[in-house]
Length: 402
Image 1 (tube, rainbow, N blue to C red):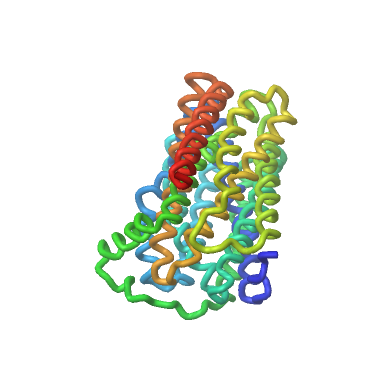
Image 2 (cartoon, rainbow, N blue to C red; image 1 turned 90 degrees about the vertical axis):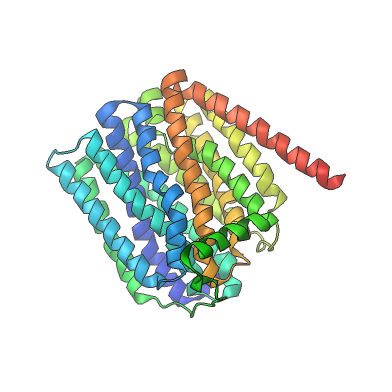
């Protein structure tokens, strides 16, 4: 099994603490989405909030990536989690004092999105520094499992708590969950960073070096492209679930929590399925990952066709399974050959493609849902994307064989 990184006590401490922080982040996400839906009953506004949450990644993540390659990454991680916990506390006070408005929610979401933009390259540079270089692939797999366990538990806790104690108390609880994560960050130590010298280049030269690495490395470029398409359509749809849970099936906040937890179950299964496979080899994206992308896009259309709640849960779990498998494969393809002082820049570009694609997809899905109807929007976007990517892969395979 590809779980060798867990032999390191250093990495185990980080993983255990990370569960609390990730659950807090997923609770934060489901709470923000529910607030947006509860205030407006508008799929467009829910999609807009999802876009605002991830859009800063598109603009700022590469800049933060250069910064991460130059600054002590442990200090950066601690500072960012302190800021995220503080923003969560502020949002709790706004809701508790009944000051929440759509505009204020959008502002708070933007600030949280800025922290997410900075945290992407920090997180992706931090984990590999906790273990020996030969265990980096294991770190990617375990990180995905940990992330998706929280994705399964966080929305379930969040949805149940919203229904049980209300949004304000839910926000307070998630704020307190950042404390164990901060404690674990303070306890771990990082191996010395291997420097190639590129991090000492002028800022924009260093940024351009990261872009050139992606553009001239064919497996990395293909991984970015495939991951981006899946993020745009499938992950974009998974970010606009309140209209499905409540607008289509009338299940309320509890139903939203169950639906998001179903996606978490699919993601955890996807993570463990990768863990039992042999470690991925550098220099290529596995064939099964390419086929899984087409299947995941087709499932978006199937979700739109689902007539019953139980069927929607199964399909959403399947979509999440596929997005997790492909995310692990694409991120591993990008991570394996990176020097430590290039990791922040290149992985920030991966974050732009993954999170930025989800942001654009969520915004577009919200608009299409209000225009065409939520289920019709899923059917059309999923079908067109699956056919287009399948055609692209056939053309590439034909050229390679010819």
